Length: 174
Image (cartoon, rainbow, N blue to C red; front, top):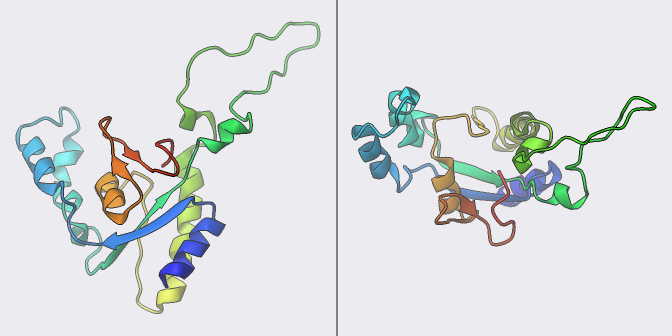
């Protein structure tokens, strides 16, 4: 079943697909301590749903596995797609936009793009697993410690900058 899910994930445009258990992430105690110290600032939602973040069973009771996925946004830059088109009014010079914009923000909203892909993958997984199977998906919007789960699944390792780094994809991926 894993191989079929990985193949479908690649067909949907994901660059990597890995699996891990639905056990609590190793960083759960650090999150609890961080919250107890009040270091979340104005992000009160982190404390409100901390019980879910530290235990995937609170998000989807009975879950046994978590599928972690990677989608690179670095390759599109190689194709020159980061430059906006310069369409001006005839007879007027066009000044190209200036400024630095995060790579991932130069394209269609990744929440929408990846959400469409994830919806398709979740439907595929439910069809494989049969009646009664349940699946949830998030694009960094759910109460899960996705970076830690992705590291545990083998998508990459957490660097000094606290981001996940893939030996194959680098760190420009979702």
